Figure (tube, rainbow, N blue to C red):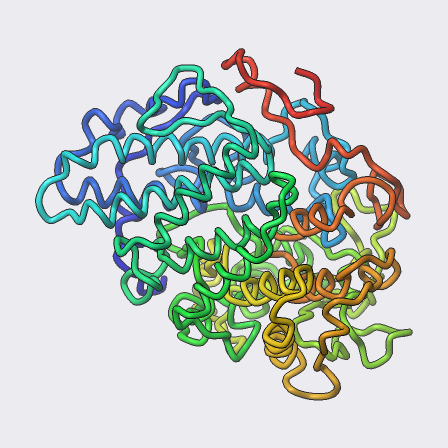
Length: 574
């Protein structure tokens, strides 16, 4: 377990564990467990308010208060329905970055981009848990004026509002037009205000928070993991970059201005790219200088199945180790990726791998990637080569189809285990925080907005070159120029040529498996339709076109039934 900050300590003690009954029609905070505190009796001491705020933050990481298999709300399997893992699935699994071999009934729907309104655990989870954050934040804000002395009400109010805004942004991006409710407009059947209406509310809310002294410029030290002005500006930048999708009106100049606000706050790029995704990324200053807003995890205290590390590493290692018995396999896993096991669920597509530059482009090898941001394994532990493409035999296991992504690890930034080998059997849960927002994304948002608007191209080129210099370890011909920035270019290695395609490819190289790809492809008009095909799109091995309705997920039927006034997204019926 790593030494943690005040927010994390509160997460361990948080007692406000209200729940919903599987729908959010009334956005009430009703307990599943009558022994836990809820809003009518949870707010008495200063510690109660700290714990309640920590609970709001913690929903991204934890399914419930009583261990990894508990859940505050009835959705389904607690592992599949943690918010950050479900959001990752929605943002990555249908795209050209990843496929999932796990055998859940919804797995093929997400792999092939052919879901409907039938209940799908991760779709339900993102919707319900984001609305749960909204419900708890509203309840917290309603009770905050009664807080005892010693509580910084301005700070707590701003933090809760940011968490609520992040939840609403996530809902706007994935579902378009969720029901809208705050502490000021309570309703048992909250109405929708339209995607553009929600965008406008978020625009005002986040601008007010970003400009407020109630939040620190950066959340550092004991405040690491909390909301900050930098997080608010960065979330605004993400909104503005995608504003044309959300509202029909481009906001690229606003995106650049918001990015500049972030860059003026003193963040810095990590020298070591892989350190950002290592088990000590909370305590390593090289990583924390770049991470703007993380989901905080700890192997002892946040016992959660929000585990990208186990999901992306092998369940089977080699015959000798498998047959050795005892803790031999657990010890090997601990030394290889930092926890005792792998689940073998996720593999990369060839589109992701081939976006990187190799010493020999005709014969790609994981050890010969020139851009060291590409962290893959191309052989299994028996020494057998893995194919670049994911073939047809992969339900339940990929066998030798597709490369492993070893970007996420629970080893420290030097590649060393953080726990003793003799403790391997007990190391189940990762310590690796998941950066939801980091400075490199801000650099790329600025660069794309500059290219699209034709402004400040010199600054944009410098920002991209800083990222590429890190990736290439300042070796070889890695620099780009303004022509590269504004040119049309082939997507991945064999996709269509599109305007600003180099930037889309650079975003994949920098941000792969960080939950951005679906949103990026939609912004470029490539997620649905048939202009860009990748393996297993629409269930075809070489890809096939899809209906544009899949640019949004359907509002879950549980909420449609609970709130008869809701309008379903186009193409999904009502």
